[in-house]
Amino acid sequence: MGLFDFLKKDNTTSSILTTDNGWPGPTYLADYTEHIAGAKKVYPFEWRRKLISTAGNSKFKIKYYGQLLHAMCDILIVGTDFAPALVVAKDIVSGQEILLFDGCKNGFNPMFCDEFTSEQITNRPLDNWYIDRNKNDSFEIILSAYYQIDFDDESEGFLEDVDENGFIELADQSKMEFEKAKRNAFDVFQIIAITENGRKIEVLAEELA
Image 1: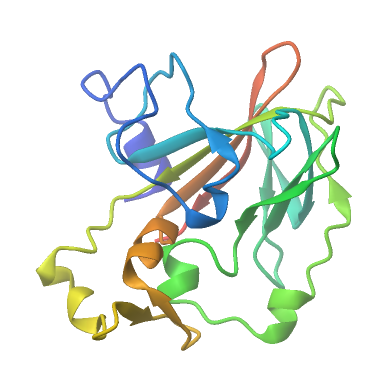
Image 2 (image 1 turned 180 degrees about the horizontal axis):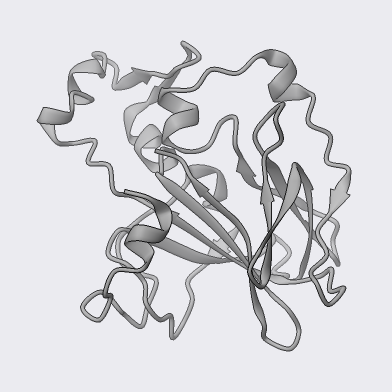
């Protein structure tokens, strides 16, 4: 199922007013997010949070490796022919940098299916700063990860690959704790930037399974 297929589904039964729906979300973002009050149209399989730095700030600039795809009213960050996208947020007050998405490491396919060379992983300079069509370059950021793969379903075969220590082998032959892998192997990841006047911009929408 494609990204926009399930996002276009009728969501009247899944709309809720909180992002506290039980999904713990990606481990690498655990210390940098907070719940969103009054959230709308949160899917049952969606982890959604607002980005916040350890200093408590919520305004960021976005720098990235990749190229831009003009899609309707938004400008999306996508990968290049050489390598997947890499996106980092920078706190405009403290200067703290927070990894938002690494297309070589985050998501189901990068973890369990795709293999990348060391050059693809390391040679992705963050030389570009994201600027929207109206020249805005600082934003509040909303992150969403979608989880539609049932790792605990025995018929899927993942459980039999977990070793006696609770680790599972990834595509790069490294091992990760199974519970941590389930949190980081989302099948879709989305970044929404919000301007000072409240306009929402889709910055990244990666289908990863």
